[in-house]
Image (spheres, rainbow, N blue to C red):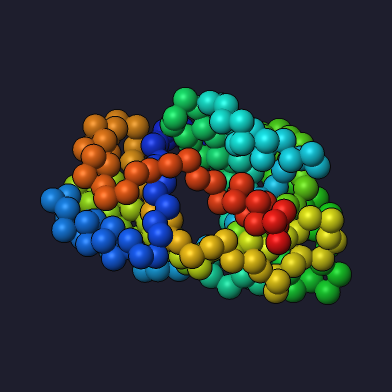
Length: 229
């Protein structure tokens, strides 16, 4: 049985055009919350899973208040998924929480195929995780980007800058596509995150932000980039 605590948090996204990036970086660095580097920068790879009819994608487009994403995430080399995490990301009325399990993707397997790799990952999960996975068994895209991490001096608010965002199409494929990526555009994504009890501090920070936050989903934008290529 899953015993992970549900830590609800707010997550606000601010797409930043490249010609405004320096302005936003200076704003964050000089803010009285005294942001500093939190972790070393690293590359992030996320395999998004969905139903064959893209039900999770449609949920996001519709903007319904309760929705879910299923993804497998690993860090660093795109071709090394040995220390991956299976994440179920839930959103309810503006706040969200994640449930995470260890898993792996062995791209070095000579006969690697998504069907067998995902079935193996599923079979090695506890029963509660298998139930959460439900019907999202189709590999749709891998989203890869470079992330920089910052945190406020009181450690209440975390900020990340995502650059070099790429989409790797996995639809209708048995083999993993790890070489043909499509850039999502010339922008940087700022994400501001905090636990639910710090909503007031987050609101104050956003009030001084040079740019307005907006709805933004890497998964949705990745699919859109594939549809319009």
